[in-house]
Image (cartoon, rainbow, N blue to C red; front, side):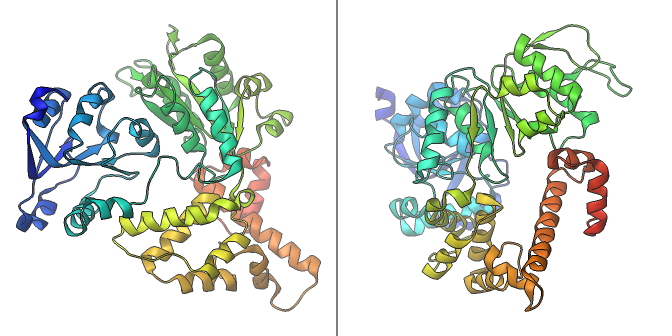
Length: 463
């Protein structure tokens, strides 16, 4: 600790934002006017250090999603001040992982977006119950709890991440929807030497094919009518950081060829441009469909697949790692208790037993949404009733069969109706994920466009 920092005083009523909050804080400040709390903010590293040397605030509020990477150069100096004040750090899991080992213990990590309601709840609990109680009740203890919570299968995944993260390998991350593929991408980026650079995501299944090429590689000036100036693509914006290609199976053949050139030659061309541009970004790719099957069907280039699958990280579905369900339930209950100002005590043993019998086709995302509903409504019984009666999409498969059976029909007929219902749900989910792009949906489901249109009509899914 430097001498100037020893001479600083603690401002018991100041909340210091780093950087200025994206929300109007006047309403929150008025709520705590009787407490004498005032809000202030800093915008630059130098200003932050000067303020901390002059007077240590009661609470630091970091918003990592809007603070540039230079904060890591001043973090060691900030640490010296954290022994005399507390800090709340907002950010994505990947951001939080980058600071988890660099700050003092009096820090609470909130993997959330900073908003007025969340800030007001945090201040209320700190002032009324004290910091220690607030910290104990916060829902996150270590980053990536959603990925690595007491499961041997995910421990193997973690070992692969730790091994490849410092390298320049382009891994292929595969797994069903909702298993945590994006969290894996964040984990790899945050453990790499590029962690202080941007991580940029492109959803290849959600962006129309006609737009995706320009989105990835950029547009040269006047490449098209209405393009008055040069526009860099996501590959260029990622620069020396990481570009995460979500649902890479959604790329068409020309874009697959261009991406292969990026991986092999480390260069690309803007759309409408003639000069090559060096590609400095590291690429990460993920898919929820079987790319090997797509290769065999001629929908995906084998040479690109070989480049991508040097290291293949496969995330097991939640039904294959049910030992994590209880831990995940506790996590989500704490998360939504905090976020919505609830004090739900936790799920009953009976409900958790039901969760362990369910196969979770929507994986962790589905579990998260159900817990959110229980905590917000504070009506566990109603949610469980829907599950056991088969009235909701998330009812356990053995119990949902009652909805198809209704006391009549052969086993074969019951199975046929259940299969159709499942197929309808899968098609609807994929349509929503691709923003109702039917051609992209057909490609991801590995069926013909004509067959998809027939299914849409059959199930009455036209919007």
